[in-house]
Image (cartoon, rainbow, N blue to C red):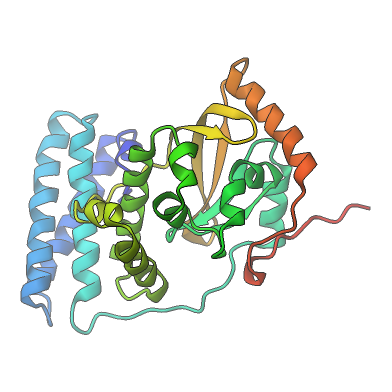
Length: 289
């Protein structure tokens, strides 16, 4: 099931209902599965309630966004129940960089800012415009750059994002969904622990249990070099890893924001800073004859 309610709204009703019924069956089965516990029962029953409510409502109004939030949160509770169940498989595959030479070439071929990020919100790679757009992140002491650390721990983020409150809520929702998929992921738990310790704002938002994320939308930013830009963003999942995506940023033609992106390209040409992403995700430049 799609965890982004705004995307699932656009799915045909039959697909939405079939996905929800499948998740509901898993939640129901979890209560009777071998090795179930009071904790997994609580999570599974919570998932059943949310999914059942969502199924009743989606038939009456398939375009109701709140209904799709119920479905996404119910599926998230099932993820939690499945991962904390005694005897559940603890899969920790070897981590490899998703940034291949061909992926970097795709980034470099784009005429708009583009970055690659994972569910932990690490910024893994970028084209020149993407690096220019998020120049602040590449100057942070801790690398690779991380959007959550920037937003909650770097005071520059308050000026950079015009709607900092919405941005913080979105990032917390992404991290909570990521943690739900694999509660034993050491890197994710360490990041959440760091943010909880150093930011009371993060802790308060984390306690709200928002799990849905957005795969498209708009961001209004105040870039320190080119000024204010209203940009549309879209996430595209990389083949082979559903939790790593390319995010692109575009502006409506003929607007001041489009002029801002043109200015950003000029500014990027003057910078050409050395790459600061760690050695495991080195930027790979295409060779030209």
